Length: 356
Image (cartoon, rainbow, N blue to C red; front, side):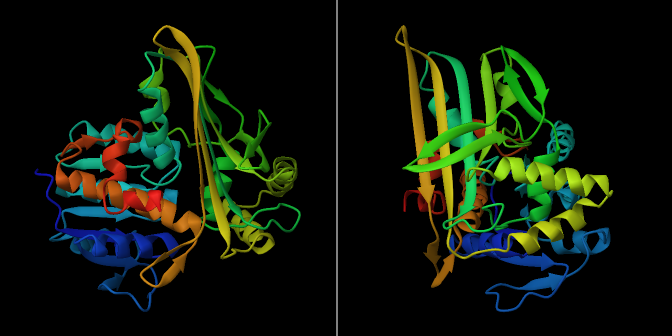
């Protein structure tokens, strides 16, 4: 299959999905959308069907060369399989490790691109980390840190659910892949607490699942340390750990826990995304440490102000779609985020938003 993408189906038209579709349309792609419920005031055609309806999904993919799944992680695999079977380029935002591994297995025989993990973390943060690491002759450690937060923290958790609450809890509950002392390992979530200062804002960082994407595969045997941590305002880790332990005692489902968390930490419009990457290693025979940090607030796109978490996630996957279409990335198989060239990514119409 060629790289050329003319029409893209975006599945899941929430805050992020509707913006992904809008960005792709603004970039010259023909776009259609799909969601389980009707969505009003869209600038592109959309239809309503349940993702478990394979016939409806197949019909929606007719005439499309690409599909972006903006669904919660546990709904991505049916879309990935449908794309794989039809030779349609596939992109998603998943942070879920088992989902990514299943897609990686499909990619061996794929006739099209399979590119999960194209959001903020995994996604953008791995692209920046990979770019910084390539500037070293040899690498000793790679540290990735991301925090999507309310600008003005309130409540016991100092947090606001600005994207999938189910996805957040999934990251908080599952073991985390790392490289420690040169060996791959699984470590507990909500652990290895540290303090970090970003632009004068004091935050805490702790292990969560999924943020490294495929980087442990890429850097296995090449680094002493590789880890990803989520950043929150101080005190969040201890309180959220207690909350999740209490929820688990009563055998509450992850969906119900997500509803409780959202009620306690409702979305806010004034949010902020912090990113921090640090790499240590050898450059010209000298031990060096290089760091890159970022701070992103709400951004006006098309006369609408979008939350930081929405646009940083949406523009990332839209940029990857652009790169596949232009031939800047392969036309088939699995795409690792950390292997995407940063300069080319930031030169796309949507990647440039990170420079705004």
